[in-house]
Length: 425
Image 1 (tube, one colour):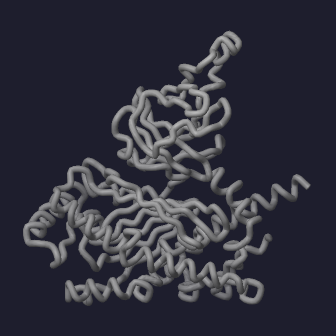
Image 2 (cartoon, rainbow, N blue to C red):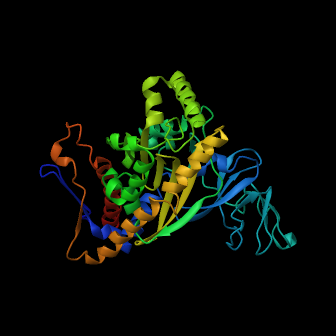
Image 3 (cartoon, rainbow, N blue to C red):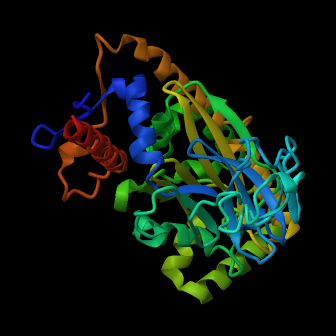
């Protein structure tokens, strides 16, 4: 299908064809033009702090080993034996200098080099002199502020260029501590019976916040009467390469120096000092953004960094048009006090965790959308026009602009696939 979006600026209308959420042909194009060519988040460098640390990951439909090899380099190895293709590492995480394939006992160093195999006399001399039987590595692995990405396209631009203006907002998250961020133990894994693009949209959709998460806001207002005085105001910003962000005033407590009455007075004094330290490091304006503003950052196509009442990174991948697997990471400033970490974790689990007030609500909403797409033949279009009527020069014209940016980048990628198909024919 070539009619994915209708971008009618003159009529202040932006529509997305609902078939992009249901068609297997579209998913095949997404895998070829998006997940095979864009930078994809594999993990945070602090997940593998020691030499030999590794974690199994699924990234862009591939089974990978995210590993800090014995030489200190962070690598992504394809977790498949060059011999018969079995998974080499079966444990989900661990520390090892050598991996041994269960099937035929070929052994590999943690940089992928083949170092042993039974029955060597049955193979020709110099069998692996050129390294063709080593575990294959993803050649493009790059790191920005601890966030590690892979790319399967050898012709892709650098990660720094790809992130573009999104780096400003990642920096605001990473600068919460002069020592950077660290990933907390345990990755949350769950699935949603909905198309992956719905989660990308939802993550930068401030419009749904109050109606969908009303229960959470009611509880917060009972805990803190001053919450009612804080307007949920901010802006949506288009960033490079389909990335987007919403940045808005935080009405709730933030462990990075915004106190709330549900926390004790000692925490308040500590947070006041934290705010002073941030002001000294970055100046008043930037310290205010770090401490009192939320950020929902979408890195195209499938990484979301939520810096709200806590910090989480989510990545997701479709196994079918109506089903995706989600991984969620909790991040925190290195060197954070135990009392702050406890407040942070409570905040995280209360709202962002799989059993919190937000995530089940969001998943229910996305699944309701997916189920209703059975009506696509008669009701074809989603509307993402909010804010267009105000005009580009209006300060309030940022409504859904970040979502439209995602869809324009998405449409460009799919159209590239269609053009190649025409040329090949």
